[in-house]
Length: 117
Image 1: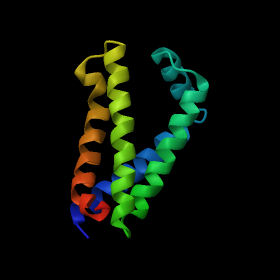
Image 2: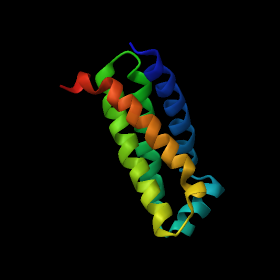
Image 3: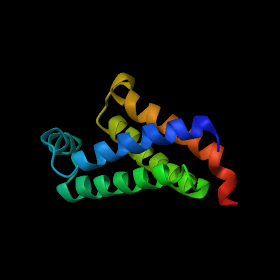
């Protein structure tokens, strides 16, 4: 067990759990997805993906392959978030959170990658 990975898994897990559940109906998320040009079903789908990835990275504290798979889902999700910010011409400051989450997910993946082989 690598302590850096565990710390990042807790941060990512709790953060994605919170933001995932917010996607199911938070006024801020509804407005955000409308602003990005995405439909309600995609917002809910994104919330489900985020909740699943949070469960995987938290469970990954005890099973490294789950941490690796959860981090892969986070990486894909954050690439989508970054691409969305680029699509609507946001500046780097406005996409700093997805970039930070991507980097944290990448570190978790790299630490736990061996569990997949």
